[in-house]
Image: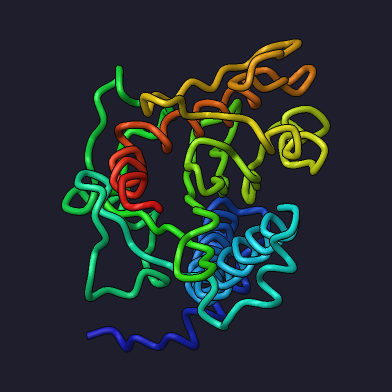
Length: 267
């Protein structure tokens, strides 16, 4: 039986001319294999850090949005430590989910889990998201035991990315107090302007739900109605993505049942 000696085989391989196809293929294969392992290890190692960065970015954007609501900063400064309360909502029933950590709820994981999401019919999928998580978090700013601000979150397809946002509703649950786009990758210099403060501030004071509970947000070049918003010039599809986001997540297949239930409970 031949004596298998890895060292001897390696030396024979190194002694081969560099221009031989066998050596070229072998070197390319080894480089590709090492690179693949390095990429896999890096991806696994960095995944927790990436998740932490995303969560930190979301929290920062929500704090920026809260700071943009007139008078809210003073309210929070004088309020108790539990002034902002996070709850998990069952979107189908509109009821709170008990016995779970709402702050740890992973929306993306739920959307990709068939047991924790609902496949939307095309006619209902205004946001273009395919599957909707069955549970979503809601943040309540409390004063004197009652919500003065209700903050929901959602996402929708834009022109070339998924747009994610917080929507803060005033206590009437029909008027936007503030909106904050916290994640998007639209066209630089055009669609990305949806995340600029100037455009987001246009949403403040806009009515989005009428007395019948119908969501009526629309896009207009020179909006004059309470339910219209001026789009970003040159970025109609990105602007429309935000409008679709608001219409879907405040509607019947989003937080609509929850808002209807909360409206009855409000003083």
